[in-house]
Length: 180
Image (cartoon, rainbow, N blue to C red; front, side, top):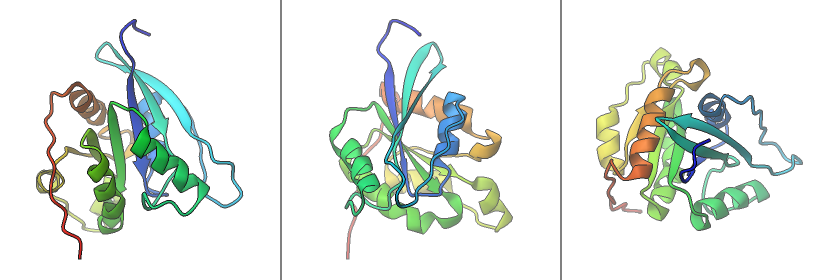
């Protein structure tokens, strides 16, 4: 690894959106996690190099909300809200975007150092779901990258966007969220 500062990237998202698969594709590891009761809460840590920079990746437990209702969600919430990271990748399921936006919006109220990883794009395509990522990015105020992590599609683009956001080369902005 290089002598420079390691860039810390957190992966967050709902359970079953392919977060661990994204982690494995980024790091080259073979991490398997499960979100079932009785399982010890653990956070996977991996690393990768990209464009002569070193990255440390933290795979947080899946959570539906920053309002923690389990030990797993508490670990994820505390990391998102109180730890120092250079970029957070919010992994969302392209086949069920609406369900995933609750957590996404909550995270974006905490930080704008974020990239939305729109995963499972192959499944969305099979279901006839089309998502305008430029419009989604504009509405969220952060970049959106399409991936199909299990085949590695979009991972290089994700790494590039992580680099751009963590270095400040991509400007993100706050969007006012109106709640009923």
